[in-house]
Every structure is written in structure tokens, then in C-alpha cells.
Image (cartoon, rainbow, N blue to C red; front, side, top):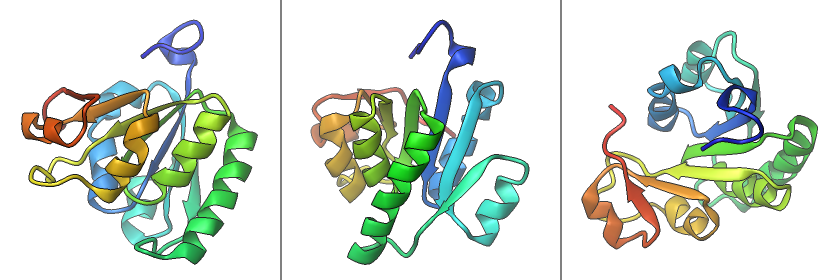
Length: 158
């Protein structure tokens, strides 16, 4: 996906939960290492370690069925996205992606979701919510296609 004049000119927002979701995006380092970027994730030990030296914003957690933190993350997404003006928002999940995708889309960003590697037999909640507005919805397994009509199978990240 090319935005503006060339791939190196785009500004990317990576929004993800910590743990495995963050690890999935780190696997794409060869692609993003030379691009302007910032991260939105949980302020946890693994995130602090993995993203040492990276520009980051800490979002609120826990997010599982937590309306209060969804609201707080929605306001955070407005603040961060207006300030940073990313061209592209990429996520592998989970819940923090939802407000960033919807607000980002309203502000003109392209949104790309990568469905997680380990969910073959059923869709993720986040995937179901962001699928309708995603500019590109990447699947890692052919079997995931039955849940996401506009998903594109690109294979495993690992």
C-alpha cells in the first residue's frame, strides 16, 4: 500500500495489545524499520522492553468487556490521531484497535488489520468489528476466509 509520494513518506500508527499481538507486528520489522512510525499499546513490561527507543503512547487496559477503558481509549485515539496524523493504521488486535480504526478512518487514514495466526476456527471479536471498515484485511490462513468476506490470505507472518 502506497500513501503520498512513496512508501518511506508514509506515517504509520501501530496499535495493538501487548504480548502476542505486539509480537506479530514486530515480525514485520523488515518492512517498517525505515518508515516514520509510532506505537499505541499497553504500558506493560514486555511492551516497554520490546519498544525501547520507539515513539509510543500508552493506552488503557484491561480492555476485555471494559466500557470505561473503551471510552478512555476513544478519547485517547482522538487526541493522538489529531496530533500525529498517520496515513496508515495497522493492527493485529485486540480491543485498542477498535477506536483507533474508527476515528482514524473518519480522519482519512487507511486502516489495515491482520487477523491473528492462532485463530483458525472462529473470528476474533476485534476482527469482526473492524472488518467492515478495513481498507485491507489480511488473513494468515485460508480457513479464516469463511469469516471475513473481503479478507486476503497472505500466509503466516512467522
